[in-house]
Length: 194
Image 1 (cartoon, rainbow, N blue to C red):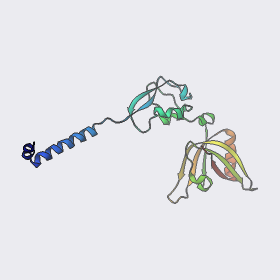
Image 2: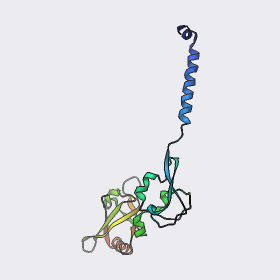
Image 3: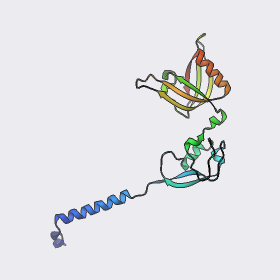
Image 4: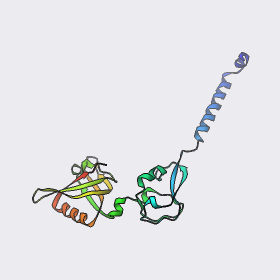
């Protein structure tokens, strides 16, 4: 054994090392991507029906952003499809409508200073209450409660003084009260605890 090691020079050892490194790199590069169970339509699905009531199937697919995974199904089982989809099409989050939107499909746009909207810490999916302080008599009242935030963003130019812009799911009465409040009072948003 000792004689064999003496006959092998450094170039041979370098070649063996490079070959081993190349083999390990090939194995790591060609390793298949991790897969997840993705939700697909088991048949043609109509809009407006709860996901929990629909025929859905799962398929193993490479993990990718934007696909509804099987573990997400419990969280969105009460949600409905916004549009009908065909059999074997994936269920994408963008096709889902929150239960609050089924109850109140009208949307109200509201822009509020961040100091009156939880410092801008409002996100889509939150529920909020709306208070107004009337300018003529300086009395504060709650005019809407449990409104679902469909979209929220801060229109910020980098100085932290941008407005919080929200789309709220509302019924007609709430829309009327909000419109009147925006025109005749100062609006404050309270984010409900989850």
